[in-house]
Amino acid sequence: MNLSHLLQQRERLLREARLANLAFAFSRLSDYAGRIERAGLRGPVTLQESDPEAERFWPVLMAHRGPQSVIDEHFLDEDVDELDEILLFLEDEGFEVDFTFELEDLPHRYLPALRRELERAGVALPAATPSPEDSNRETA
Image 1 (cartoon, rainbow, N blue to C red):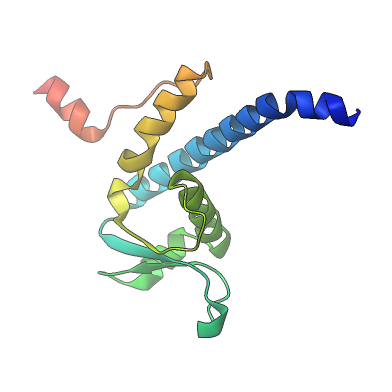
Image 2 (cartoon, rainbow, N blue to C red):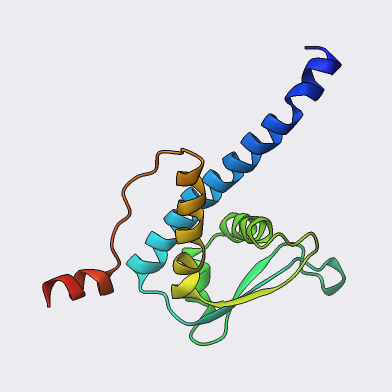
């Protein structure tokens, strides 16, 4: 591969890399959504960035209500680090920031927009599963 060929392909490669990152975010956030739902995890949490000066060398997902051990049981350090990277990418934050959110709202905040963008780009995705609220409305 020569330099001029690579430069000619640059825009396409950047677009494909972005789509690959969106697909990864969609896949992993879908996995986390299932984990959150199956475990019945709810309530406010803060995803705190690593801060070596505070002797926190990796991101931490902190519960505001309820026992921290429940969060730790369902999210390994690697999961929290990955979630941090995904949210930084999706929020287009070029700097380190803390995220505070309701745990049960995480999938609803990101997955619909990710699905729309990927489908617009022609990416085939698994069928969306209706939320329990949607299922209840159909049978009522």
